[in-house]
Every structure is written in C-alpha cells, then in structure tokens.
Image (cartoon, rainbow, N blue to C red; front, side, top):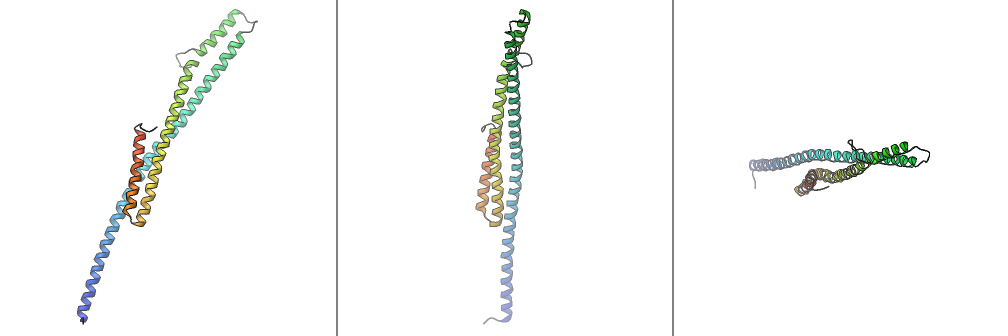
Length: 192
C-alpha cells in the first residue's frame, strides 16, 4: 500500500515529467514551424524573382513580335509603292525623263540605304525581330514552369505545417530546387 504522502509525491513527479515531455514536444513543434516558415519566405522571394523574369520575357516577346510586324508592314508598304511606280512607269503617255525618274525611285525603295529602310534590308531585320520575340516567349514559358514549381512547393510547405511532416518538406524543397534549376538554366541561356 502507498502512503498518501508518497502518492502525492508520485503524482507530482508524474505531472512534472508530463510537463517536461509536453514542453519538449512544444519546442520541437515550434522549431519545425519556424524552419518551415523560413522556407516559405525563401521560396516566396524566389518565386517573386522568377515571376519578374517571366513577366519581362513575356513583355519582350510581345514587343519584339509587334516590332517585327511593324517592320514587315513597312516593307510591304514599300513593295506596294515600288509596284505602283513600276506599273505607272509603263504608261506610254509619260515622257522618258518621268519614266526614268519613277523607275529610279522604285529602285531606291528596294536598295539598301543608310537608314536601313531598303526593302532588301527590312526583310532580315523583321525576321531577326520575329526570332527574338519567339525566343523570349519560349524563355517566358520556361520561367512559368519554374514559377509553377515554386508555387506548388509553397503549397506543399503549408500542408507540411498542418501534417507536421518532414517528408512533405523534403518533397517541397526538391520541387523548389527543380524550379530554381529551371530558372537558372533559362537565365543562363540553356533553355529557350
């Protein structure tokens, strides 16, 4: 039989042990929450940086495509003007001087000039702008993949906080690492 004084002592010791265990568990949980919260913040910063790169490439792709379109349109306008001049120069009622002037003007439209506005100069310029726009758009798509990986990693970290799971944290970190590698490879010109 246990004496009442001894029983009280045993109960107090058991309560103290339970409080120590509870305190230790709270410290472990707090450390876990703090570490995961820091990862969420880090991934959010990386996501913001990747988003800026993605938006910049998307914007560049659109601007280059518009510039290419404008250059093609300008070239087509010059080709139409050239055709009109050549057609008009065939009129039998024109004097030889006027006819020669019209054909010279038509030739000037085609030939290279200092401003880079000759028909022969505009085609390669427009092609280059189109290619640059397409490349910027492809880079933007790779950055978007990296963005998505970072977003999913942040969601997984939120789930890990609720589940208190280091395995989910590891999965989130792996996914974020893959997203970061895609972003770095894109920035380095390896993906485009």
